[in-house]
Length: 81
Image (cartoon, rainbow, N blue to C red):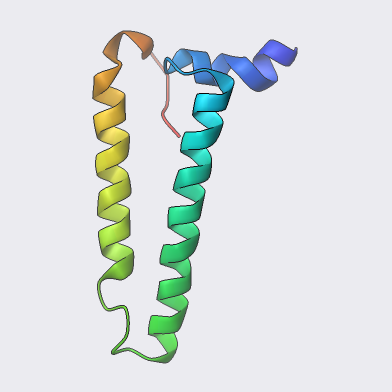
């Protein structure tokens, strides 16, 4: 059960629990910052006009680069998140 909860997904993408934790927290922080920029942009449209879209593009690139750097780790139905 603990394996399913904590280790199954990280192993499916070729990471240890702590590698996956670090990566996921990095994504969370970047998304949080982009969300904050969107909120400020909603109030003052001249600020952060491209910040969120650049963040999403950068995060997508990181995920795709990471995914292709470990092709053997990804099996059918595996997801990267």
